[in-house]
Length: 279
Image (tube, rainbow, N blue to C red; front, side):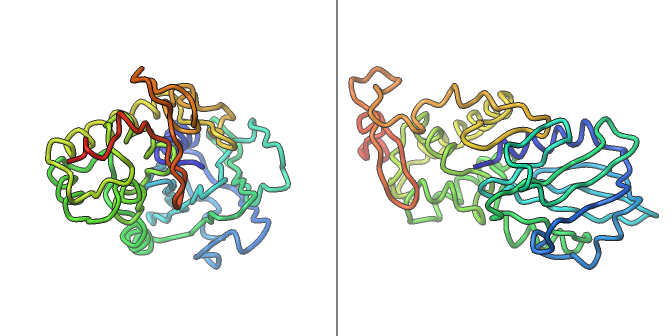
């Protein structure tokens, strides 16, 4: 499932290869792939792509025409991808949108989404602002240390679900929550509000480090993720605990990685991430 690093990689490739290009045509294979704004789809013909920006796990593309700016917000969801024409998905029948460009490095951007948990939204500025306010909490790459401390201390629930709560902290999913908590040596079920200030500060630093490292590696290609150019993310080779149940702890502590099943599987070391360490 694409998370923050994968969405950031997507946004950067779109900016690099499509900015300044004119959108000449948009083919929509099924109307229900557009969550809102379907009636405004014809406005985009002749508009110029100005930028692409990540919000949480989604990518917003800004188009300008005759002094007006509108946006296409792409939710990547469980299996959604934005792909250039050079990338060849395994099941092309799941390409639901094709956007054709002239004057850019790439001639086409496709929205591929076999399970259709994600959607596109066609939004004006007011619509984008409302969409972002409704769906996304703070961004873990830009939130301040003080705000992060306030957020964690203000929540009495389990730590891992907090990291994955998109309306509180936007962009972290199951893969990176597992990796962050292992490196921070915090138990997934620790009570967030009971963490010490020093533990929260470590969590703050590690969160940024893991996400930035993953972006530099092109994200994690687990199951279906590919960047728009078809390349795979290499951070999966640096996963320390995700999907590694039964493997020896990377810290050489003598214990094996365990799997804890709740809403989503948690992979952790019972020694390095003991509940006692979180106090």
